[in-house]
Image (cartoon, rainbow, N blue to C red; front, side, top):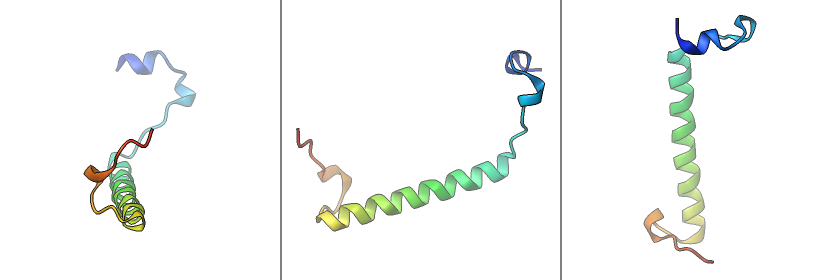
Length: 55
């Protein structure tokens, strides 16, 4: 048993479906990259390297 298990109430312990979690994280990442691309396009910036600090 892991150290984590002994430090938490067993009633709060949940098993994580790793395959489901990986698919969800992958979709989130793809959607995030797409959204950032759309925001950059709307400002006329063609690549994140062209962002500058406006402060």
